[in-house]
Image (cartoon, rainbow, N blue to C red):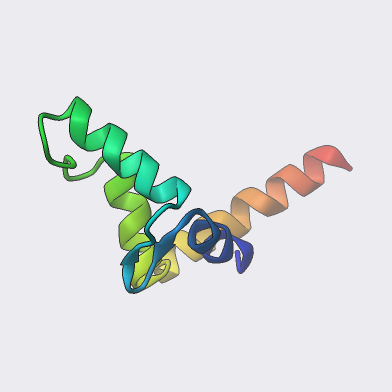
Length: 76
């Protein structure tokens, strides 16, 4: 759960916006070109930017922890 925001920030989705020259910047460029100049609300880029800017909600953290527990149990 802690690693998800760190990974998202590592891609370039930060609290200050999308980092220049990052993978996030490339994703945003591709999304904007595909969408006629803007990034669509609810798109992958928009969701990742929201997480980068505000962090994960409590519900998202619970969901990720549950999914991680299920994957760990399945692997064991």
